[in-house]
Length: 377
Image (cartoon, rainbow, N blue to C red; front, side, top):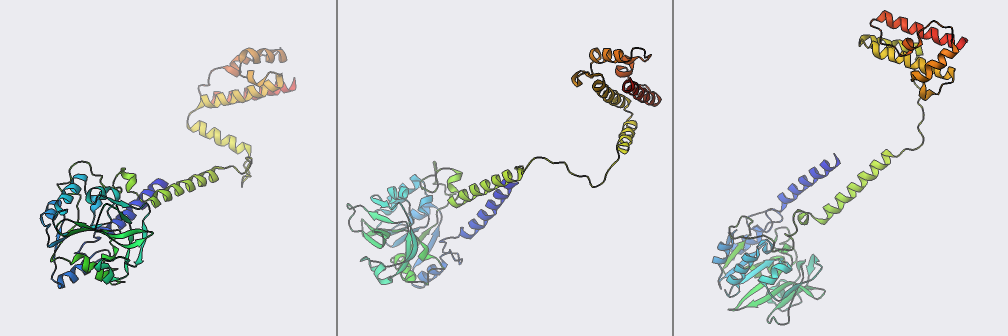
């Protein structure tokens, strides 16, 4: 039951979480995580925005007059990343990558390294010479942090944290460039009106008359081979579960185990419980007799009578209780105690089951009489 509750809770929360994030960075969405506001502002400034979900559509629009925004580059397979890099590296346009991981950058931006620890998204100062950043001023950046290799010339490292840039611009041939965003939060509707987020977004996305908004899809037919370009999409099912869920489930399992041990622990020796009503032994005997009679179980009744009598006789005759039900041990001792008795001890104590109730009553009476004789001798 406990495991079922945990699984059900996980499914419900995952569904709620997925429902709230399915439209993240979508220019058609007016939700807090969407980017419809910046798309409308770009439209007012004459920038044509096109939303695509396949790599073929995205690469077909590249050119010197086009900005290509890739919202989830980590979803692309290795072959897709290679095709994208070939199409954008010499197009002369601008390519923006939202939070690309180290594995993704090895193909899309060779020579760029990612810091081991991400930074919290907060208002940061530009501290660079990139015009779009200096004009916007403080903006909500952070997330993944990048550093360019010294061999890469013409790069701009903006909004730094501990010496690493959360916005890194790399120049490409034909006056193009690639912009790495450590966190795309400043593009979202809920953050656009804060700090210089709107100014930075409009300058980065509106530097060219055409904007292609690429939302990678898992259904893209170009996604051939094993999907696993991102550090976040390898490792199977467990790698997709947030660490907090794994630790929380482990703690709940430990708590359940401790509760089970606590409930199962004995606090002391067993004690007899006083019955609320005293029941006479005769009533118990009569009740059991009625049950035997109702079930027509004369064999069980006769066996119970003989067994109880043999046990009592063994203590009177000095026969060990373990041999009370053995004819070879009990009968000689009984014959020695009652040498002149006319009773057939073997038939009485070990004989067949009476064929009717009258015979069963007679057996009980004879067993009582035998026990009285032994006690009186």
